[in-house]
Image (cartoon, helix red, strand yellow):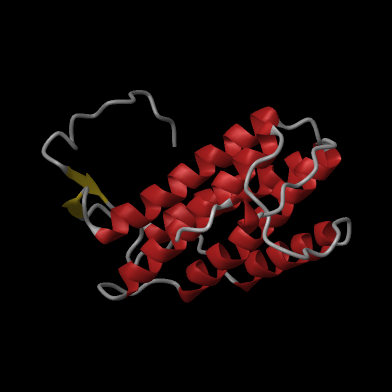
Amino acid sequence: MRISKVYTKTGDRGETSLVGGKRVSKACQRVNAYGEVDELNSIIGLARAYLNDREIDDALSLLQNDLFTLGADLASPAEIQVPRINDDFITTLEELADQFLQELEPLQEFILPGGCQAGAALHLARTVARRSERQVVALTSEEEVNPAAIIYLNRLSDLLFILARLANKRAGVPEKMTDFSKRKKQS
């Protein structure tokens, strides 16, 4: 499909079309769910712009393509035939997480999100993945949703956490641990 025009004016009244043509409010749970995934994909793109690491960039490229599949999955009622997230997508995330985790030291305490620009952007992506997951879970109370979509987002947020830590490590930026002692005690 070629997009020859960016604006169509079909959404000017606050509605959009799902895959299959059904018109819905832009504020409905389904649109919110795939909108969160779109935001997540954009943040991963931002992280990639900051990266200078081919291996992590290749993994993030794969994730961005997966997120287009997830977006189509969420934008499509169950009866519409589109590519959907399945166990193979989830297994790939788990394998990547296991692979990259081997390079990291086990955590002894909580770390503060941040670090180098790519690491900080990946921490942000992790939080948006969690928000996306919550939105998809909320959608399940109204409509049928591919259960693999929730599992995928859950694993994705874990992988993004690992990649944020790894980006920081490879950039030579140490992780900052939480320090609860910095708060003065209130009497």
